[in-house]
Length: 67
Image (cartoon, rainbow, N blue to C red; front, side, top):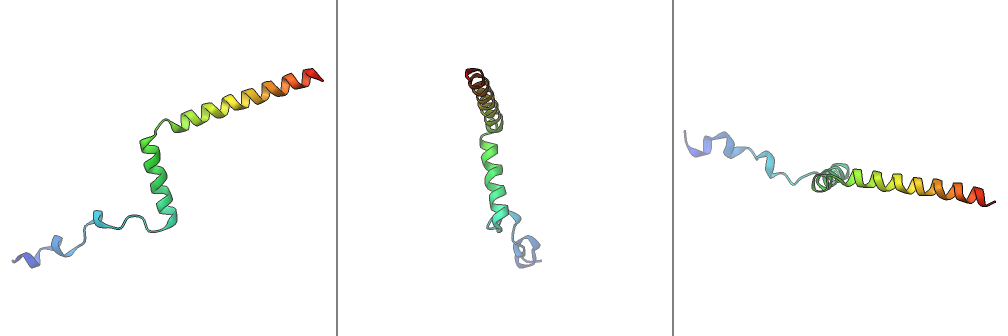
């Protein structure tokens, strides 16, 4: 059996692909990598959103009392 008969020499490896091919797959890969690098981002965004909602509710309550 020579080196030309070896199966792993004939098959392309799974890791040598060009990466994701469809736009959706590319987008999923981007967000997956982004969230892997910044794991606390959803918590921070949720906290900021909650604070903004509380401020808006407080402003609405204060403006209602002013009239």
